[in-house]
Amino acid sequence: MSENLTLDHARRWAAMPKMAPEVEKRAALEAIGFLRDVAERLEQETAAIREGRAPADGSGLHAVWDFSAFAPETIDFLIALLGEGEVRITLCGGESKTGDTLVPGLWRVQTGRSGENNSFVLARIPRAVEHFADRGLDRVPKLVNPDRDVFAATAILAEINELLEKSDLRTLPESTAPMVELSRQPLTPGDLTALYSTLGTGDVDAALLGFARSTMTSTTVRGVWHSRIINNVGKNLLEAYVVAKIPPELPISVEEFADGAAKCREFIEWLEADIERGAIGGEPLAAKKEAQ
Image (cartoon, rainbow, N blue to C red; front, side, top):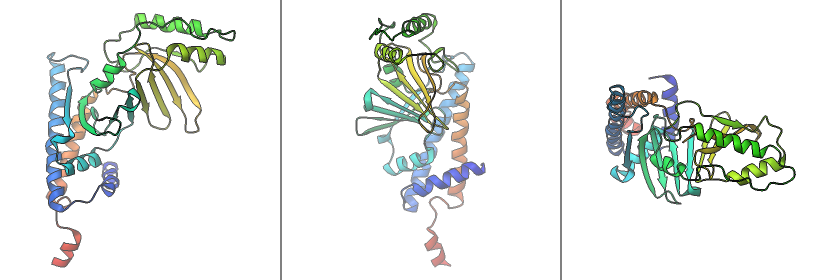
């Protein structure tokens, strides 16, 4: 196991609620069973795609585990183990929240305003996200707020409509998607107001966290997303309208199924080794000192 992974685990275990040794061991063993299931499903889907028995775009993979299927301490253990990735998705203003984990393809989904319903979902992206992204108009409507200082907005909307006619909105994109960039265009405040008003805001709001914050919000037009990349001081590095079923930055690629399986196997190896040497489920350090 790499040094970076070991250090990352050390930080997360420090924040995990303390458990009695026997409880921690049960949680670890149940987590191992879950991780094996995830790895096997990813490996089976990869083989099925390769052999032509499953859709090539990976859409055949979608498995759900409700948190109620696990002991509460196992959930605490898994949340600490799996950590958080970089993708955050909110549906319908907070009715549902989705985030990726450190295992590519494994997502945590919360529904309800208080997050009372929780599950793990294994997929390129949870189907709930696809469902709400698929809502909306088929074409860009007529320009809203056609004021005197609106110059470029009409042409931009026409360009978006052309991209809609040429784009495949039925499958998830693998790498790139067509866009109409706004950042480098000489737009007036009226142009921006007209674009925002005409295209509106849809039900899906996503963010990609990293060295800069990338946000992607669906519009009232199906397949059109308002995308921004914002640096750490709040300045727009890029603003554009992207045309795709889902922006390609959000779902994992089919090629990452193998990465997800490998990450699960890595976690399993680490957990089994720690159980074997007593680091998980062993005697507390104080008890060992007393025995000596």
